[in-house]
Image 1 (cartoon, rainbow, N blue to C red):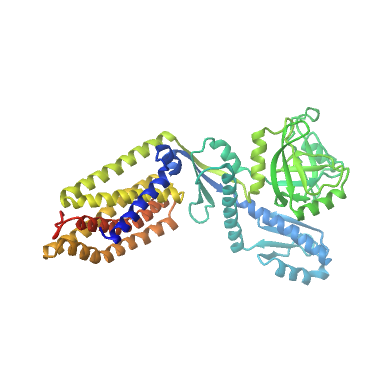
Image 2: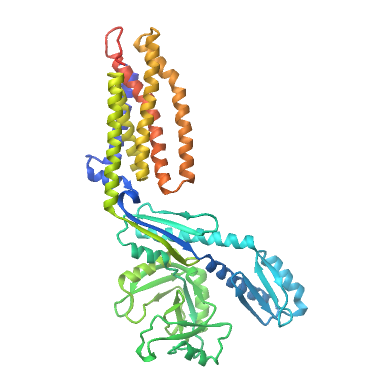
Length: 536
């Protein structure tokens, strides 16, 4: 045996051993295979959820932010006005702008609010400006809210430890839907609640004499029958306070001292009574602003508002800067509730609320049946194809069998190494890989047969056959690889699963069909006496 052939055989054996260790461990076992080969939703069960993003919420938030920003800019420039309010989502107005500063107001709008246009200057009060969000900008904000919602969902699911979730846009343009597939989820209801939770945290000062009140009407009466523009009424989560008749309402400042965007971290803790609560830390900027607010508000109540419900309203006894805590309503949080709330606060608030459009639970038994049938189909196809090769190409069919088995070993080893997910379409990709691999061997064997018919020796026929077929094999595999890559880039979850196995299988097939198969032929012919023959 020549040194070149020995090295090629050693390399082949090393690749085979490494592939087996990657997906079956050492020593190889079925438990290692189950652990290292990740199965998709269709093979191990889980949840399939389609959610709609209520993008109107994002437009409303953008409108409110524009009003607040405009108010701040007008105050900084000394431009007086009567009031600024949101008329509807994507539309707001400023009433009673100083006529002498009309040009300054318009210049401010042009420079600072390029996405908004002055839609009207009519109104009961002179110098009333109505501003409308441009349609193109509105579409951008809606699309961004979907992207942000997907990222927030991914952050929350990653913290739950769900393996290889599928999170992607669903439907056509303008649908604003998200598809979430969660393999092997044990508690779909909990995951659904965590994904859907807006988790908008706001810390707002309670106005003097602002509650608690036993009802919204009582709070409204205390304010003189109308709610001032800079005040809002918020219900408390402590709605079982018997002394207040079952409800509790507060009048709080509309502008929050800090929000969830100012949080740097959130974790589960314990209150003085040993009950679970959520502790949070603020960013440097948030700490400075919160310290300024609390220093000027000692003795006042601070409402901790979560998703527009007050969790608690403690009295500020001293300056608060870098940290705080959230306790549940009467009865407090359970440990699970506190953990979930800390999780969603760490991952950030949703830019818009979600509504569930579809939910399916794929049972594990269905997945096991799919695995069983898929494996059976793969084994049957492999056996039938190899039997054909052995009958039609005689002993050379053994060469094809070895190359094909090694191809499958490499494929599973790569799946385990890259932590790719094996789906039911992925099994179809494996079966197609078997067919492509056999097709490559047939091309090689037929070319060798032609060389033998031309009167060449077995050694010369093998060398010439592989050399002349090499370009053809590379061309066909490259074309298939390009198609598979496009399937992966633009396809949905199941299509991507098919593309992954096909790409790995095609790449491995070039190695086994050209390198391994040729090595086996040369090793076999090199072991024989002069003028060796070839059974093909």
